[in-house]
Amino acid sequence: MKFDKVRQFIEKHQLLKKGSTVVVGVSGGPDSIALLHYLWTFKDKWELSLIAAHVDHMFRGKQSYEDLLFVKDFCEKLQITFEGTSIDVPEYIKIHQLTPQVAARECRYQFYSRVLEKYSAQYLALAHHGDDQVETMLMRMVRGSYGKGLAGIPVKRDFHGAEIIRPFLCLTRDEIEQYIDEFHLSYRVDPSNEKDDYQRNRFRHYVLPFLKSENPNVAERFQTISELLMEDEKLLEEYAAQGIEKAVIEKTEKKVVFLINEFKSLPISLQRRGIQLILKYLYKSIPSNLATIHIDQLLSLLKTKHPSGILHFPKGLIVTKSYHQCTLAIGEETEKHYLPLELQVPGEVFITDDVSIKAEWVKDIPKTMSGVDYFICTSDHIALPIHIRTRKTGDRMTLKGMVGTKKLKDIFIDEKIPREKRDRWPVVVDGNGEILWLPLLKKSRFFFDQRESTSNNSHVYLLLQYILYNKEL
Ligand SMILES: Nc1ncnc2c1ncn2[C@@H]1O[C@H](COP(=O)(O)OP(=O)(O)OP(=O)(O)O)[C@@H](O)[C@H]1O
Image (cartoon, rainbow, N blue to C red; front, side, top):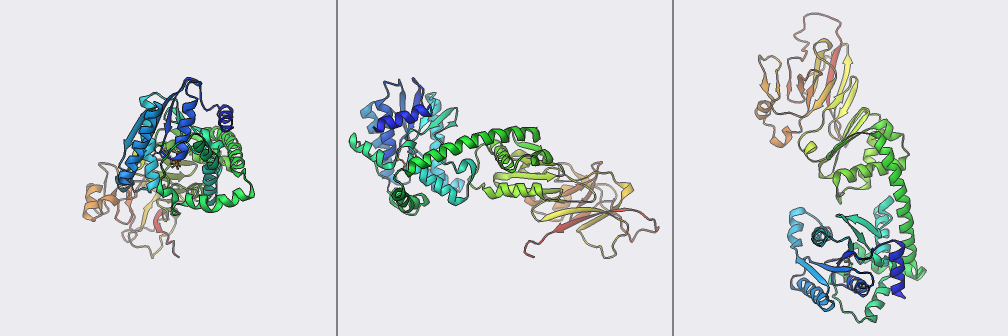
C-alpha cells in the first residue's frame, strides 16, 4: 500500500526518470534508510543507479563516526555505492559563526554537490516526510514567513545542475516506521532528536500530536496546501519577473539598478516578489539573517518622500535610492565605496540610516553658522549637479586659505581618521569633479567665508549641511 502511495506521488510530480542516477542523502536514521531501501527495491524496474551519500558532522565523536560505518555497511549488504565523509562542523561553526544546524546543512550540501558532480547524477533524493512538512510550515508561519517560504518544503527543486527530490513527503513518520518494521530494517538514532532544545522538536512533540488528534490526515492536508501555494507562487514569481524586467535599467553580476516609478506601478505583491528575485540573483544563496523586515525597509525607502537614502543589508549588500533610481549592489562594488549619490538643490541625501547631507539655496547666510558641519559657496563658482561619493585613489583638494592641493589621504592621516572610516567618509564634489567639502573635516577654496566678504552683493548661496539625526530623541 505504501509502495503505491509513494509511486503515485513520484508519478504525479514526475520525480524520477527511468535510467537516471540518483544520489540519496542518508543519515542512517529511519527515514533515509527507508528511502534508500525503497529506491533500491525499484532499482531494476526503473533502471536506477543509486549512490548513498553520508556526512559525519563530527558532532558526537566516535558515535557519529559509527553512524558513517553503519550506513557504509548497510550499502555494502545491498551492493549500493557508498560515498561518505567526515567534516569538522564544530570548526566550521567557529570560522563562519553559524548555528550548528545551519553549519551542518551547509557542509552537507557542499558534499552533496561534489558527489552529484562525480557521478553526473540527475537527482539528489532526501527523506523529508509529511510530518517534517507540517513542522516546517508551522515554524515558518510563526517566524513570519510569507509566499514561497510559507509553502514549506518543495517536492522538487533545482540544485547544482541536478534536482533535489523528496518522494517521502506523501508519508507520515508513522508510515515510515511501519515500512521499517515490515522490512526489518535497522537504523541509527540521533540523540539530539530526543532533546527539546531545538525549536523543531518542540513543534514535533507538542503541536503535532494535537493537530493529529484533530485530524489524523493533517500531514496530507498540509502537503496539499503546500503544493497549491507553490503553484500560486510560481505564477506570481513569473509576473514579478516580467514586471521587474521592465523596471531594470542596469544589471551586472553584482549590481541591479531599477527605475522607482516603473517598479511602483507594479501591484505590491509583485513588488515584494520582485525585490526577492533581485536579492536572490545578487546573493546567489540568501543569507539566513535576511528577513522580511529588510524587504519592508526597502519598500518604505522607495515610498518615502526623501529623494535619497541608503540601507545596509547582510553580507555587505547596499541599497541606494537616488531620485528616480534604486540600486542594489553587493561584493566588490560595495566593499569599500558607496555609489555617487546625486544631491539635488534643494534636496537631502541619506548617507547612512541616520546621517544626511542637505542642500538648499539661501539668500542670506545665517549669522550663527559656524563649525565643521556646514559648507557655503556662491552659485557662480561651482557646477551642478553636486554628488556625494567616497574617496578615490589620488583624490586631492585645495584647502581654504592654502596654495596648491593636498591629498585626501594626507588629510585623513593628519586628522587621525582610522583607516576603516576613511573608505566610508563622504566626499562632496561638484559637477566638474572638484572636491568642495570633506564634511566635519575640511573645506575647500570654494568655501565662501562671509568675514572676508567686502561687497554686499545680493548673491544666492549654496548651503550644504551635515545632519545627524538622533534616533533616541
Ligand atoms: N548526515 C547526513 N548525511 C547525509 N544525508 C543526511 C544527513 N542528515 C540528513 N540527511 C538527509 O537530509 C534529510 C533531512 O535531514 P533531517 O536532519 O531533517 O532528517 P533526519 O532526522 O536526519 O532524517 P533521517 O530519519 O533520515 O535520519 C534526511 O532525511 C536525509 O535524507
